[in-house]
Image 1 (cartoon, rainbow, N blue to C red):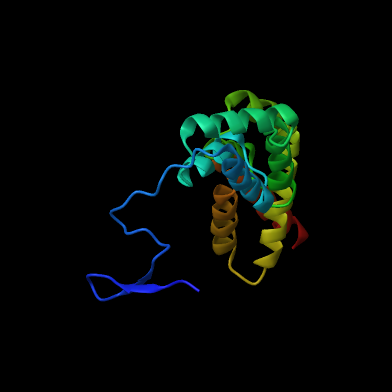
Image 2: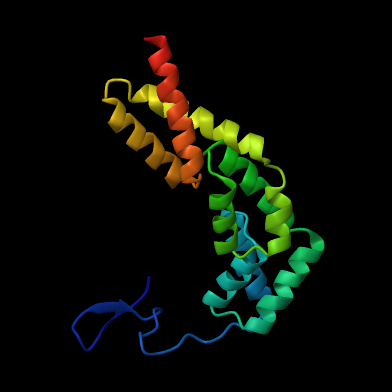
Length: 184
């Protein structure tokens, strides 16, 4: 059990928790740093940039963080190209995101342009248009009880949030509207 101490403001704080104005001591022990790195990787796969940033955020000295990341890449615990390819497949197939939206996510996660480019090569223009058409059709059908203008606006907005271009979204909506008018 930790002892409690009275802080100047009257709040109670654990002795183990450093005061806000005190910087925690940097971690220079390689074994402790490896434990932290494995903890980060246990929760979810990470890019090399995310792992390094996670280690530095947990006060591992940057040189040690770089050495650990390099070693983990060497032994295959961290694989940016493989992780980027997995993210592309799942974001496109399961969430229906466009290449543009996936590119932004991968860049935000710290993948380099080579890994992003090769991962996005899995999706071509036809795949992207086909996926957008399936999403648009599903949403169009869900909105069947709404006026056509509302359906158009909502389908275009949904496709835009997924990263598809407005020209593609409007073309798909026009096709859906025309198909509905033919059925009537």
